[in-house]
Length: 87
Image (tube, rainbow, N blue to C red; front, side, top):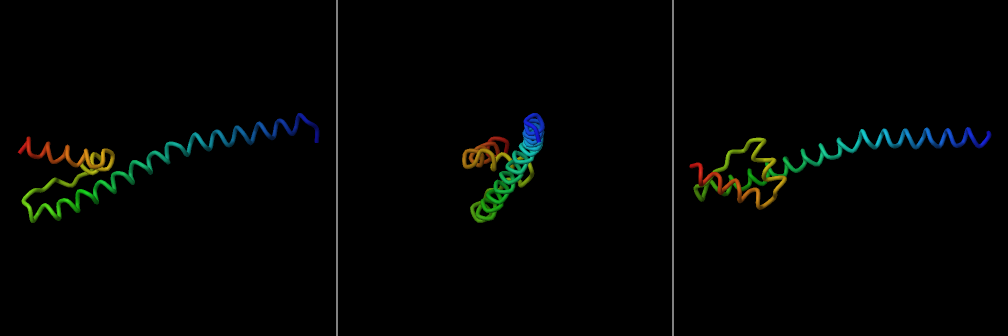
């Protein structure tokens, strides 16, 4: 094999790696977003379970789950504040 063939193979492998990485990166972010939404939903479910005894309830839907999941505790506080303002 000559040097040009080795360089061509190396360039092809590098190009293949870059294409695969560019396709997998959005999937990692999508997986992260779904995971955060799932964790937020579980947190809201647990708070609603405790809230039934204390007299408050937050609707569990995808938007509230993602808000709680992405923002964490401030997101849950935000949802409770919005619930008290709206009614």
